[in-house]
Every structure is written in C-alpha cells, then in structure tokens.
Length: 291
Length: 89
Image (cartoon, rainbow over all chains, first blue to last red; front, side, top):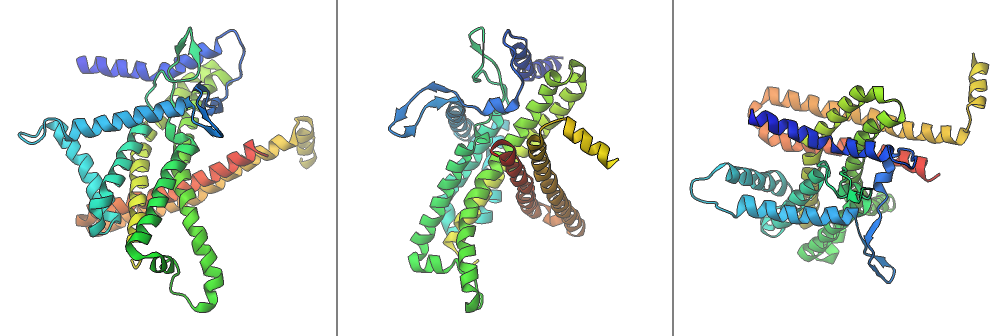
C-alpha cells in the first residue's frame, strides 16, 4: 500500500513540467510554444572577465549540482560504513566500481596505466551519468517564473554543446600529453602513420591528422545530440497538446512517457559508459600505439 | 495530377521553408536508415555469438554496447546537419 502511494506521488511529480507548460501557455501573454526556447540560456549572475563570459546560467547551475551529487554518490556508496557485514548500499557501490574497473578501464587502458588513469575515467563515467540523470528529473531551475517561483522543468547540462566539448577537449589533451610522455615526440607522431606504401603518404597523413580532430567532434557531438534529441522529443510530444488540440493528450503523453523511460533506462547509462570507455580507449591507444 | 501539385505548392506558400523542412527530414531519415541497418547487424551478430558460446556473454556485452552507441551516433550527426540547415540557412 505504502509502495503504491509512493509510486503515485512519483508519477505526479514527473507530471509537474507539463503543468508548468500549461500554466505558462494559460498566461496573459500569448506566446507560441517552441521547445527550442528551453536551450536559450539566460544569465542569472552576470560575470564578464574581459572577453570571457563566465556568467552563471541554467546549465552552470545544473553542472554545479551534478558535481556536488557525484561527490555525494562516491562518498555515500563507497566510503560510509563499508567493510563489515556488507549491505545493499555497499553492493551498489561495488557494482559501480566493478563497471568502471572491468568494463571501462580494463577494456581500454593497458595494465601499467590503469593506476594513473582509472580515477579519471571512473569519475568521468559517474559525473556524466549524474548530470544526465538529473536532466530527467524535474527541478525548479528553469528560466521561467510563475508567481515568482521558478517552474519545474527538464534540462540536462550535457544537452549543450559547450559542456560536452569541454569534456571531450579534456580527454583529447590528456591523450596527446600521455602519448608524448610515454613514447617521446618522434615515436608518438610516427605511430599515427599506418603501414602503407610510401606513395600513399600524401593521401594518408592528412587523413590521419583529420581523424585525430574528428575524434573531438564525434566524442562531443554524440553525447550532446543524444541528450538534445531525447529532451526535444519529450518536450515536443507534450507540446503537441498546446499546438494541435488538447484531445491529443492521452496519445502524446503516453508517447512522451515511452520516450522518457527509454531515455532514463537505456540512453543515460549507455552514453555515460560510452564516453568513459572511449576516453579510456583513446588514452590507452596513445600509450601503446602498436595495438 | 502533377499540375494540381504545383498549384498546391504555389498557393500554400514559402518555398524556402519547404526546403528547410525537407533538409531536416532527409538528415534524420537517411541517418536513421543507415543506423537502423547497423544496429540490426550488431544485435543479430550478438544473438548468434551468444547462441554459439553462451559463456562469452559477459565479455561480449561491453563490445556490443560500444558498437551500438557508435552506430547510433550516426543518426544524430544527420540530425545535427538537418538542424543546422533548418536554423542557420
């Protein structure tokens, strides 16, 4: 009985964004519904240092919250009350650690580098997972106000390109630093060139250099576009109620729920895992280029 | 029949908007076509592999999800291309 009540309350909580949308569209000013408004970031606390725009906005707030939560996840699941008679909490912590160790680090990194780079890839995985998952929980952090209170809305910091590009650049820089440190400048850059006849070099070398930069694009755009498309789909299907006719609600809300579950159950975890695994593979292949 | 189509296109408005819509739809549609084939291949091979050697399931699962995500990303490159055409031009 108690469980059912909890589930019902949870469902009502998840329905909050649609209520917020309804309140917004019922307001005095007639505004056309457009899901892409959610990605226009308004400055909350403007901080401008020369040409740099370091203002706190919605995405920054979500990032800070995500960083805090991933610290708490690490501390609560892996530090507090561990050791003697393991309980369920410790089992969860061990599962997270095992996925990071076996599935991510050992798949990409050579054995000698695991000690140094395991913390990086593991925290990358936990951080991206947390930021993704709080993007699907309605939080009162949106730009719109309803009687002075921020409305509940869905927004993931990873659905802005700047955030994912920053993460990808970090991995990319670490890759080359580690490759040069481990192999020396000459040997590392020579390892980019595959075994082909000398006549093909003018064709192959530009392609290989381009390929190194394509990694940057593919790593960042994969995460960004996945989260963007997920949010866009959910918002669009809820928005159909206001765009077409209210009678479409049972159909479109059901579809939005299906996409919501798909995103939360599959996409969120897979994208976090993929980003960390590919980072490990890139760093590992720079350390041992022969493989 | 064809002339009726042209009349319709003429009367209902902006050709530039139609072009943008087609660009967006083609970007997503063709991207999804390729990724659909690829994802089908990956899961098909996974089923075959597990049917032949069930004890390797754990090891194969990591590779499977890696391949799935790499393939699935292709749709989103198409989507981003389509969105760029829709928003920028």
